[in-house]
Image (cartoon, rainbow, N blue to C red; front, side, top):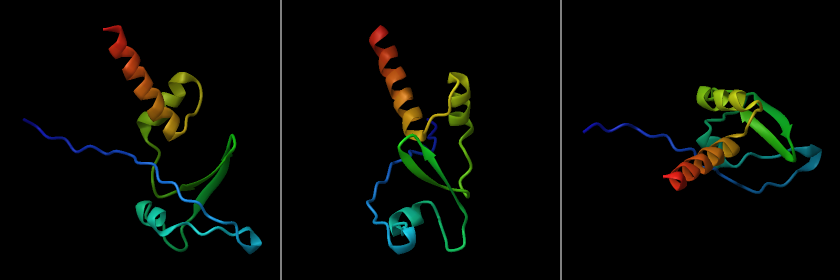
Length: 95
């Protein structure tokens, strides 16, 4: 019997305050999880009503990228995972 390692992305949510000069501190748990260090570059963008900071150290998942291209739009990680779960549940109901 083979055992394959599984990578599960777990969402981490923290509330932060905007400080003077519109500065925000990234919580330690998130910095450690994404291996963010002083001097690193983050990409910041708006996705609908979300303000997103993206670590440039972590490459985009080719699988998630292909899913976005196949459906004709770019999906966030949460949307892609949610879509996969919904698809799987729908396939189970058919059987």
